[in-house]
Length: 305
Length: 260
Image 1 (cartoon, rainbow over the protein chains, first blue to last red):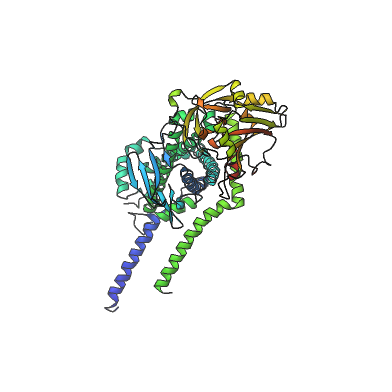
Image 2 (spheres, rainbow over the protein chains, first blue to last red):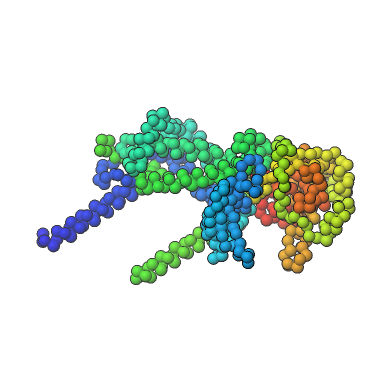
């Protein structure tokens, strides 16, 4: 060993360990140590994996075609009918004297925001055009209500059938127990929130079950948000309202149902963002592999300090 | 590859991937087999809606719920000379002809329609765009008119022909010959709330709302409720009419049952 070798080999070691730490973060997430012995277990059944990924794709199309439909009348109201002068939320494009669209404005209650470029007015082929949501967020991209509806109502069936299949499975095979928060979960909630904020997620045996925050999030999204978005969607149908008068009654009218439907859609978006952040922080590859193959690695019993 | 050219290559790749995705979405919607697959759900939805709705009535509201202004949509003032003459004449010469697969073809003036038993209903109008508006409609239930005309056993649909031309494709200020039309099956036509309506909120229909007579089919969207009706034809199939999809907007890709 020569003197000049030392710093270099130190550098190599540091490099290796930094690389190992990144690799470990990508595999097992924040606050886990590389080199811990791990054991795999079978976390997600085939049906859960299939319905999960189908749902992911279907929801994306539902969201984007829904925004296309919303663009046809970009305003929300409360009650049975539309109080056109007083929307709860609206997106408007403003023109200059020569009729060119120059500004997009988002209105929420009594607040107005300039959202030119994204909401109210956005660019298509370089030109500002009046549209609530931009072309990159809608299916189809250009304004085409008829086709947006066709996409939405086809995928609505897939969404509903997929949801019913999952719910039936959860009920019949006891998976509901994994998702339903217990009293103990709820009592532990404050502690668990603090732990999550410190990015310290349950390890070892505790990682075999969903934690309280996971249960609350999954249960709410699957068993409350899911049915709510379907029912408020059906309430917008005049035929369904005649068949099931309790639908508009339950939501305070067709326009209220439309507003709730919109809020549901964006609740899904918020859930999706949090979901992805949590997947990354708690072990991107371990989580994704578990949802693809079922295999999830946890630290060996007693190994967690 | 130098750093700069690699950067350019990557930027180019990202841009074309983005363009591909966008044009992909657009062209998917324009691809025949994709449309065929997506449209299969329309038949399913129509059947399921029919199954649940049967002859159920749409909700009727109270006077207090009536919107101050009933929002008109689509054609607001048919620009043809014929129609404008009728406006000047207060529609005294307007005729609704009922024909096609019927035993007794009939022609009714607005005065004739007003002499027939009337129904008044305060209902919510739902536009395909997403908004709703409540108004009070008075008119003759269509089933009364149909009973007078006696549909033949093979009649399955009523086609409503309207006085409003939809486009002026050569831009000469004279509307072309594609007038608005719509169709409903006989089940919807004999529904008690399906009216040939001539009054809105206790006054004769304004021009913007379809004067002198329009259809009310309360369980369907606004585009199914034809305005400016001149002729009702009973048919076995609407495949040979217009674009063959059963209505002006249906020919542009909107669903025929118009229930959601």
